[in-house]
Image (tube, rainbow, N blue to C red; front, side, top):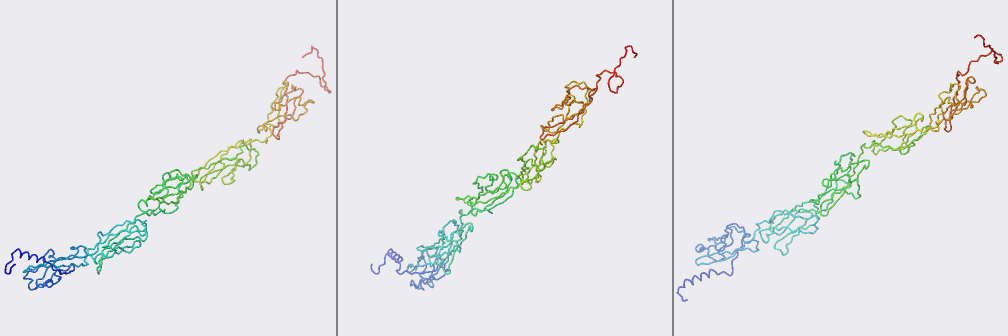
Amino acid sequence: MGRGKTLPTWIYNLLFVLRILMVAEAQTVYSIVEESSPGTVVGNLAKDLQLDILELEKRHFQISGPNKKYFDVNIKTGALLVKDRIDREELCARKAKCSLEVEAIVKSPLNLYRFEVQIVDANDNTPSFRIPEIDLNVSESAFTGEKFALPKAFDADAGVYSVKAYKLSHNEHFALDVQNAGDPTVSAEMVLQKPLDREKQPLIKLTLTATDGGKPAKSGTLLINVNVEDVNDNIPVFDKPLYKVRVPENTPLGRAVIFVHARDLDEGINGEIQYSFINQDNDNNVNTFSINAITGEITIKDELDHERTNVVELRVQAKDRGTSTRASHCKVLIEITDINDNPPEISVTSLDSVLREDAPLGTMVGLLTVKDPDADKNGVVQVKIINATPFKIKNTYKNHYSLVVDGALDREKVSEYNLTITAMDEGLPPLSSTSVITVHVSDVNDNAPRFKERVSNIFVKENRPVGDVVYTLTADDPDVDENGKVTFSVISNNNNQGNNNVASVVDVKADTGEIISLQSFNYEELKTFQFMVQATDSGVPPLSSNVTVNILILDENDNNPTILAPYSEHGSVNSETIPYSAEP
């Protein structure tokens, strides 16, 4: 190009552009703390760019480019000023370095200056967690040393003002393990140090605090709810190991007897209890009752009987419904109390049903056993004979009694006794039973045959045929059998009949007592005679009695009249001959 020649316009424009695009090798760098107030001086830009302050206004010195909203220049002083709020986190997020490329332009001649403004982080953000609280479900069977990750805290600040530490509120179960080796951010884990017990503490509330590196430091918190998850580590426990109850034996079926109750500190199905009977011995008494598996109510299933069983021992099991079930048991003693529902029972264990009538007082007739299965007064029994008899009941031992003779016996008066024995207990109302015992009185030869009269006068007409039954003697003997079997015999006679023996005149039949004539009686020859008859029984020894028999001969008109001569001293009969012609 020659001197004095004007350059073409395009070349001039090109050179202008190239000049504008040139960047000084030594770029000016400023720094400003974020959030500085508008008007804050960043630096003296005119001085640093070696611009004449007096020409700044004339040359239209100003900030340009995309970041001109944040900065401005004072054209009187050349100072670079903060124009608007600068938020480092908004501009650079969490980058370690945050700087803004800023341009300044002047005209006449046109020139472009680039400089860098580094945004220095201020601790203007508090560490925070994305959620205010978390729930951690930790099994109470977790082993010590087990770790549980925790959320990280977020701090928009970077570098020293970012999250630098975590702290866990004081507790006895968890410690905090903070990891930051090689990590851009700090994280924390909870470490179980002491075993958990849901039954003691089902919920543990902890606070995790995150702090940054500012001075003073800022912090944020996270609420941690540690829900201790249940495992079936508790056995159901009954309120008491032994339950006792008294139940009358007439309690209706279905009536509740007692409730048993067990507690299980576990939750859910681990704490849901089911009740049942333990009957390993196949005890039938257990079947008398039933138990509600849910409520533990024990009710009567079958009739109670104090006399059969007065105490029933039940073993009740409480079992939870956990995966690995756990159980415990208790004992229930049910005392079945007595009511007076059984009358006394009389049984004859030994009896002499035939008793001699000469049995002495105190002779044992029989043995009785009286049982009343009821208890206490309901089983106390009084035994007696209700009708008047020569017998009595004697208590020998406990419920054993003897029936003994208590008076004189006489078979001839009473040959058979029907003894009504009653046994009555002392219950309210009393119950009783009766038993009839028949005692036969056997005969002894204690009665001699008896004639109705001691003297028997028998009138017999003369001239009765020989062999005729003159009279029948009777003797009464109340004894029986051989003792009452009577035989008759003549034991003496008199001689009223001259030299004739009674035995030749009459005969007494031994078995019937019939007096039979052995000759025809003649009143004119024998008017009366007497003899004695003895009646003897067949007992051993035999007994007898006598009767005097007077035979009185009654005259009949069996002789013609005879005229006797005058009396002769010598008693001879004289005869006279009377002529046929004699006067009447």
